[in-house]
Length: 125
Image (tube, rainbow, N blue to C red):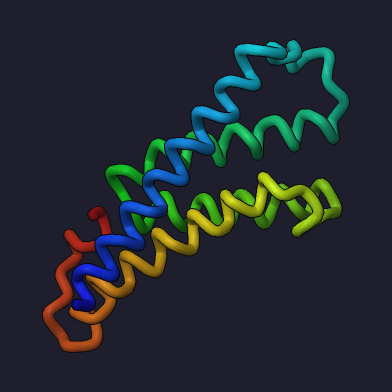
């Protein structure tokens, strides 16, 4: 039963990530992306943090732990730079997806760490 719940959490996070990626890709195609040389330093930080979160959505498909950590850190940095944490309803989904992937990894491989059967290759799964 636990394996089923972990699998549901993992695939829920993946599907949310795909929909979020497509949502932001649609906005980028619809409205375009400004030239970074014409952006203010504040907007440039937000732009690169946003691109890091989008890149992490791609990484998380292969490396769940690394992608989840990048998503959580990038969203935290984004909210510090933007001086908001939960005000926009879309961006906290990045944080939620990162947490779901981290929970999935911990329940699948973190248990092996506690039992003593942990291998280094589990870090890159």
